[in-house]
Image 1 (spheres, helix red, strand yellow):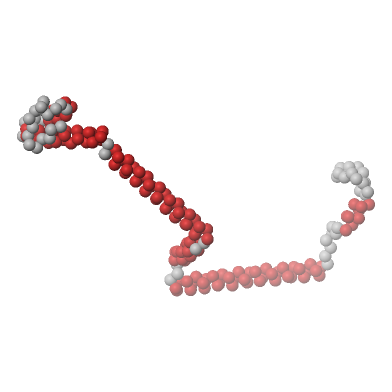
Image 2: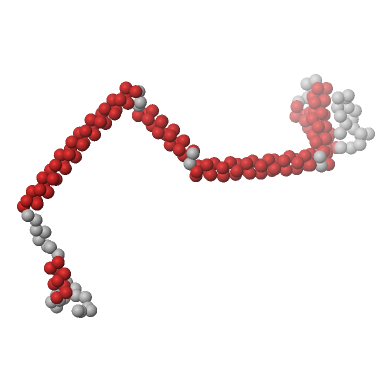
Amino acid sequence: METRQQGLLDPEPVTEVDEEMVSDVDLNNTMTDEEREEILSELTKLEEEISTLRQVLASKEKHHSELKAKLGITPLSEFKQNFNKSWYDMQTSTAYKKTSETLSTAGQKTSAAFTTLGTAISRKFGDMRNSPSFKSFEEKVECTVSNIKTKVGSQGGGGSFEEVLSSAAHASAQETPSNNMPESSDHERTC
């Protein structure tokens, strides 16, 4: 036996081992005329059966659609029914249940986090509102608003709104002891 492989264009002859392999392969595919006719006959019968089955299937499908029409089953109602069944199957699946539980847990944790955050913010606003600087600011705003209301009401339309606003701002900016404050009416607070 040779250890080297021969290519198709090599000039060396084929060895005996190769000749035995070629003789095992039937290249002529010899078949008798009787066998050929028998196979052709079987093929024709199969084609006729397939054609008959197609006709029977078409007839059954027509009868099927007629029965559905009598029952009032439309393609849309079938679609709805199939969709509802698929939706039910999906909801009862293990994956859907696990996902739903996970999302529910995540939603609860998120809700708790927002509640905690809201409580912390409310507490901070409460602390800020109770701080001395906020109290001072709140008193100044209340005093200014009270002065504006009093002056607008007491002037009886004698001055414009801008004049009243400017005098109220000037008065609240002065913040001097009550001895230097002009007299105020009963409604006006001293700031």
